[in-house]
Image (cartoon, rainbow, N blue to C red; front, side, top):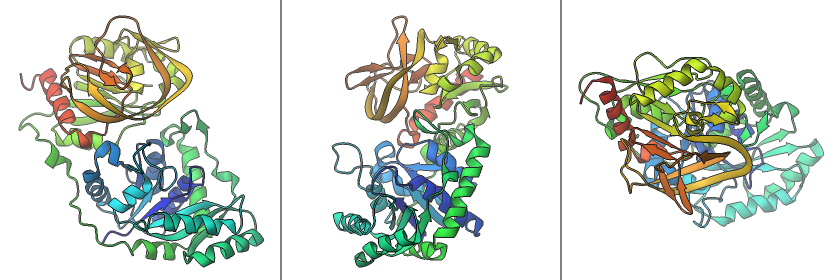
Length: 450
């Protein structure tokens, strides 16, 4: 038995993140060891989950990971915890476009046999909330909605009216949350500011959410609902079963972190370690490359907000350029691509790639099916993957290059024999040979094998 509940909503903006984060923190403060999960590819919410739970935030995404891996990855992330809170994405039944709900919150709930609690924004409705709840219950009877949390309720009279509307549905109201201005978290062009960028504000917002939940949610009833989840027949995903490490020597793989490069999946480092590498995090705003670096992973984030500060770390920029010229293997996703360019919004970057990057007003967002356009140390030409893009920048290529990916409508990214840089984020659990090949390239660079 794995006690678990999915926090869902009729639509985006209802307060799922506030409620999920508040529940995680309040339950932790009540003595539970809570594992937090996010449905979909989002990097920002899991950062707040980590603040709330004191454990790594993790994603569950049938599109990026494959349906068959969702339950095993969930079981892996639950190790050492006694309760799981899974935050949904968008509306409960909203999935990838044109797929009848594939990768939706409802899809993941069914894969995990997890009961659902519906968070409803009641700020502009009364008894009509009951009709909303009734419709969501009836829409898919395989999805078991076991409770409702009413959010942004204005007064006792308003609460009574909403409760009267929900009562005929038979779905219990597990909590009522009042409007609270302390819950506003700084936002920007891609959503919330990541927790890694504003630790004090993130901690304060998490504590405010926890206090709101403690005051308004029946935590005992919530836990009791989580315990109604049936047994889940899933063997925990194990990174050591996905890759085979070499017998001797461990190359150092430097992983960019800090406030700029905060977007990476927890399993990325777990796979690299299992494949035989020592993973060393560093902050490109201030640090040099870690000693004995034999490969470099540059994940996602917001370099466009820190371009001047990134550029000011001249030593690191020169190090990266020199080491890459000497054959250092590099995988760069989104923010990493921008850092490898000659400049970003006029600020000098590493100059590894013959390209410049700049901020635009256009949002590029969505899942992508991509085919490797060029053979590198990590991908063979023709390799098909599923990834996700999420950015407002663009890259202008200044010379002829080998593209990284074929995408519907064109090519994207830049590929060199030991450098693979693009906007596409992959979840390596679906492609464990990629971290294995990355570590193998690091071993060669470190002189551990030919």
